[in-house]
Image 1 (cartoon, rainbow over the protein chains, first blue to last red):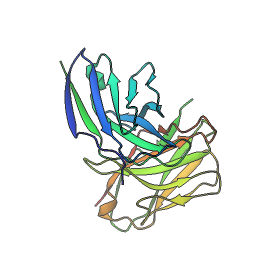
Image 2: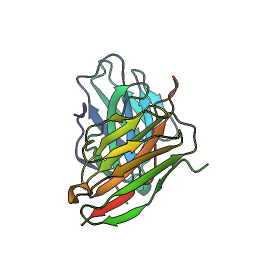
Image 3: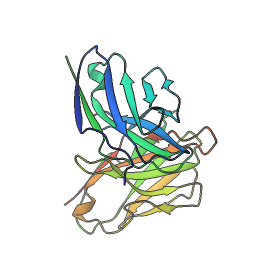
Image 4: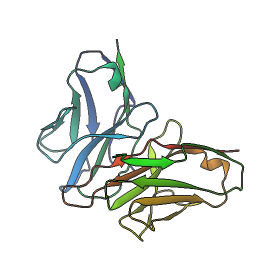
Amino acid sequence: DAKTTQPPSMDCAEGRAANLPCNHSTISGNEYVYWYRQIHSQGPQYIIHGLKNNETNEMASLIITEDRKSSTLILPHATLRDTAVYYCIVRVRGNTPLVFGKGTRLSVIA
Amino acid sequence: NAGVTQTPKFRVLKTGQSMTLLCAQDMNHEYMYWYRQDPGMGLRLIHYSVGEGTTAKGEVPDGYNVSRLKKQNFLLGLESAAPSQTSVYFCASSYSGRDGGELFFGEGSRLTVL
């Protein structure tokens, strides 16, 4: 079973920041938080991951709470091309298989 | 550099027929995975491989077999297809090193079993 809880859907206005929440209250000390997204019916795409510090890359920022029980993925300026299903996954760093939940369907609206 | 390539992209089978899906990666990755995705659902792991000549079962392995004879290829076989195996199949690969972990996915193979 997936170890995360995400809202099933969210809307965001184009050009605004999209903040996608994820609860992972049972996360253990050696587990990372990963985010992937799936645009339409393409293969999932890696976005970002983190352990306990906030992380930022060219695609997004990841904010992890101090107790690590929840996190937020931030797309700073959402575009129509960011419409996708976003998956939050916790796993031990390395190559244990990803376990996907149902994710959050983000709709960016013009 | 093609990344992860899946063949075929579309296939229609009749119940009881067999087929093989091919996944090829050109990134020299050790780890490879097969997932299936049903409408409105997340991906579920079928089988995976941690290196050439090795395979392991995932969440939903029944009705499927796999082989990893070459490092760059991971084959998924359906010996006797059933309508319940109608799905989109995704292959993925990843590094095995300390800095690995990010999965690279193919574009999917859409299988319909009548």
